[in-house]
Image (cartoon, each protein chain N blue to C red):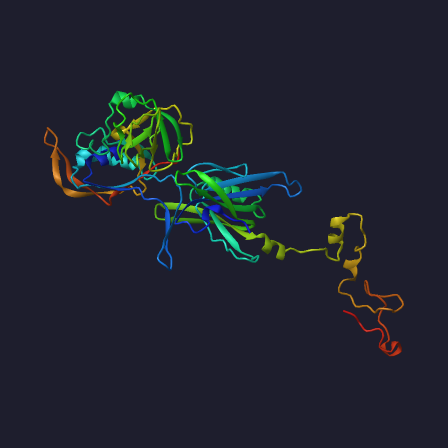
Length: 221
Length: 229
């Protein structure tokens, strides 16, 4: 477990700010092709892990993050801007769903200098929301993104491959093992019966005589 | 006409709010725990305006408030009005020429280190608490939180009420102090005005040019514009 010196022994006062980084993967086949957005509630730009966090990045609020001893599937929400139209464009024109969201808390001393940081959340953006609020002459909107922790992502992950042509050839385009799956799907056939001429497409065996087979050729569905 | 400056010059009440963004909690054993977010901590002021402007005299003011609306900002000062220049008057004992010689050695966090100190007695007060200090060319005033005396060193360190919010390098720049400082303010709620009957005005030819007093819908809530700092 990480120890955060700034909050050890329950100090009576803590000075802290939130830092958010969104890493947008522009092309999933080229992991290095990314666009990074940063925002913070700090009074000036700060550098954490060689990343400069913009103090005017439009950060509005950060939802709660669940903390527990065991690994949990907690989600969080980050509201990004109340005014800047560029952020709406960012959400709509980039592949922000699936982007990585990281949240740090930075701790300051009484002189207003950043002394240490602690990462609070790492997850993947699963959805976004743009809310426009126009009441009378007041017009504003908020862009918020929802992120799930990696545990949720892993829990929802589909592992392995399906027994169909498309899934099989995703790994090997020359693999023809499943080419005939579509033609026999949903068909009734008898196992162990000698193949005979059939009228229906893909009917295996053409139907057997149960009495003769002594119950061996049960229809399989 | 400078709208916000006119409002300041004519207001009949001013509330200054410099409170920080904090979290507070009292634990079960009644120990207070607090947290603060080191924001830009902008100045906020609420000004009450009297219903004393006559229509014909206030037309320029009405137009400039409409032009400024709730988005435009204005640089204002408390020094250009002899009835108001006591607000944020410099309380230290240095002469203007000596203050003009002060330069910024560094300004990190809320620690402002000044050099170019005059050769005066070590007990001479340079800043009293609440004295305004501004980096020359940047309309974002800071206050000295403590009394600062000359001392014997080549520099003095001033603890300011908020950290350095200026993005540019400010080392070697001069400072401005006291009511010579300027505030960059905008009015997010920019009140609207109502014309109420009264205060008739006539031109020299006898033509009625105004018969209304200006009544503002709410106090002017001014907010420091730190977006360009």
